Length: 324
Image (tube, rainbow, N blue to C red; front, side, top):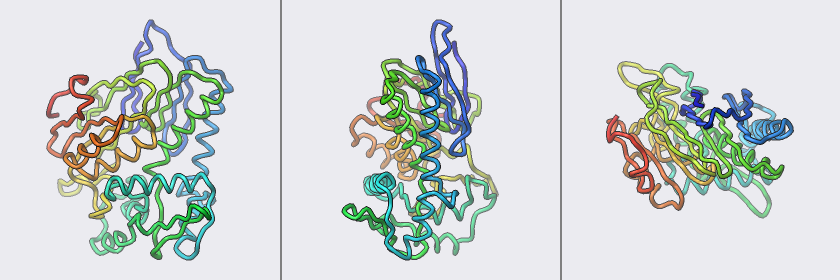
């Protein structure tokens, strides 16, 4: 049995086999559709999984003034802020990946992402002066973390953190951890196109063609792995023939221009979520070098001219043309 689910930047092409349909449930959380598939899961397991996502959303939602991350954004430019262990670890890991990607992923991107419009809703480019002003506030090196005290401080007035490139991946990993704790052996969790699967089952994930909405570019087999895609084709506008999308390059302050789509496969969802964004800004050459450097990470990159690049671990395993 096959079915197609269009969510986020992936078409989920889930093959159940032998006509069997596994139990699944959907909810709208984290501003996207969340689907959880549990082949042997109970109602209690579904409830626990969705509750974990709700907990993380409440903790990390930058648009919720009551969230811990909003409190950090309000206060950390003015004073040292005591934060919970969970947020501290997320910020610490985010800064580590900022270093790894040479700032192509930068968790302090909030001044620029807010300027360009919440969730890609802005329909025109900001003024150059506005972009330059906000760009000066984006620098992960100015996030000062004190592990001994569990505090954070911003080095510049007006800085702010955006966990949009982290939250879905972190939520996926936490849900899988919660399900394992309850004794669940197999699961697929999809948060707006970021996916993690658990167990011995092999799942087929179909990647959406970035320029043909209803066409599958390639089918990837996943077993106890995560996958995430960043692309210029979901949240964007076109003005005077130029495409403006939501993935902002921290270095330029403008949407990244070297890629159309980046798909990352790896052992954890927070890693694939962050790297999909970072590699998109790095571009195909530097991005693929990073993918090849990392252990157990594979990637598919489509550059601005439509040329397809596969990491060494995917070559010969995917049926995809060299150019779209």
